[in-house]
Amino acid sequence: MELMTPKEIVNELDKYIIGQDKAKRAVAVALRNRYRRSQLPEQEREEVTPKNILMKGPTGVGKTEIARRLAKLVRAPFVKVEATKYTEVGYVGRDVESMIRDLVENAIRLVKDEKFEEVKATATNNANKKIRDIMMQKRKLAKPTTTTNNVNENTVEIVVEDKAKVDAEALLKEIEEGKLDNEIIEIEVTEVPRAIEIIPGNQDTNISDMLSSFMPRRKKTRKITVAQARRNIINEEASRLIDLDAVNEEGIRRAEQEGIIFIDEIDKIAISSNSRNGPDVSREGVQRDILPFVEGCTVSTKYGIIRTDYILFIAAGAFHIAKVEDLIPELQGRFPIRVELENLTAKDFYKILTQPKNAITKQQAELLKVDNIELEFEEEALKEIAHIAELENENNENIGARRLHTIIEALLEDISFEAGGNHPMSKVVITKEFVLRELEQTVKKYDISRYIM
Image (cartoon, rainbow, N blue to C red; front, top):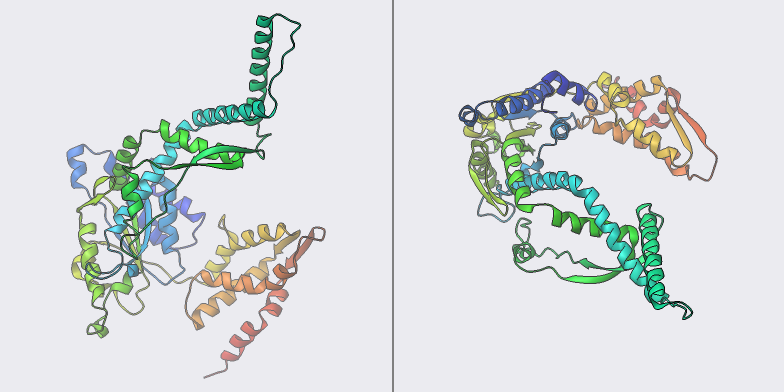
């Protein structure tokens, strides 16, 4: 994935996001620059910092989805935060530093998952053997072995040992094949400590985290299925096989060098020129608190010190009331790449309904197939839905592609309600006439509005 060119990155994004070519190009170049930087000599690499991106556009046009899909492409540590949930230092609420800690947690989880896959086969093998031993012990207690007296004592011991070995091998095979997954066994499991917050509302620090580092975790005996026991034991075995110090070190490195932080709703902490004397005194303070992390600083986390110099920050906002220029100048300067996302048209809505892998029409068809309904949309029906979505966004609040969810839910409400799966497979075709009939009130509203001066 490191070798993907910007064109290839855009092609991948096109599978899920319609339009917004400028934004896609900007993030594709930023991602490729990560790879280019990694190929430079170390001295030169230290001097190259990422060019942060500011996206401006109405809600529902793909700002968040572009950033999220970008991170998935390269399995980079990714965090999406809302600027509105932070408060200036000294006020009650989350402080800005927590976004860096969240990124590190995400990076550690990514590395752990990769290491887990490496040791999964060994851990699974060990888990199956442990379950076999528990079940063998259970069967011995239930049916004690008896031997006859008419043979030599040594012969009896050999016969019993051979039979036990054969039984153990057969049992292990059954466990590996999943034939005993629903059988109940009794095992010891490690209790997960409950989070106890030191400061209400602050999710970053809790007593459980502090104590778990130097106090052993308690174990308790539980009766669970073999399948559940296997999952628990695999996790415990994997934890023993994985070098956690190496995981933490790699996690910190990835967060520093490959991390992406998406700051949404950044326009909500901008103070517009019309309301500079308003009550929201903390908003400009939050901007000033964000600034050091975007500029580059060090943050202490429970896994170690992290530098923020090379983290890619992508900020986004609608900027309906405030303007980009209402952000403090220092923060504006740290987002040199500006991208304006366009409003979606009926043509875009039609593509959203038909082209992406996760198109809402495909999702609805799969959901209703569970209840023996084969759903099919005619092309003219999809065009009419796209046209209505465009009108709704133009005449009401513009909520972008999210408008399609509202329309599709209203359109299929009766079908979804009546479907119960207690009938043979039935085909339902959504035609243009069906759309006009079901959304009659919406269509009529816009027909009338043409004649109102």
